[in-house]
Image (cartoon, rainbow, N blue to C red; front, top):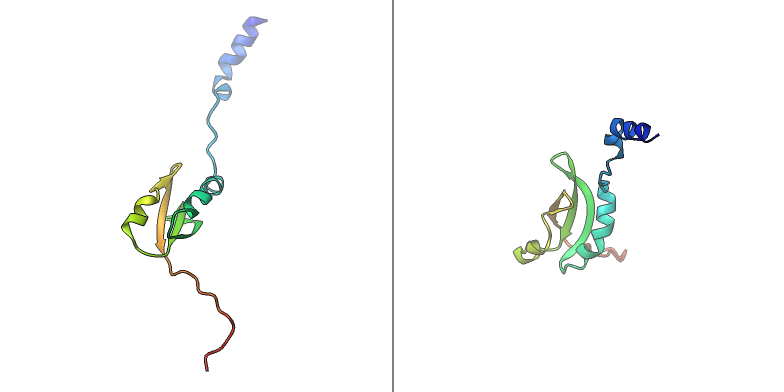
Length: 97
């Protein structure tokens, strides 16, 4: 009986090796969104494409090197791209006369 078990393990050893599960970019962003949004000057985060590969896009309200230094260049292997955006303005519906 032990010979059969040993042969089974020998034949199927690649399948039995525990491989770490690679997390999806969606899971990674979900886990890091709160941290990124607490950085003063960050106004949004999203998933996008950078050179035809998925990346995390971080939107900032001003081009400031000290702000850029607080944002990681990559998170769990996915590149982070910084976009400078104007803070959205609310439209109250009044037309200028």
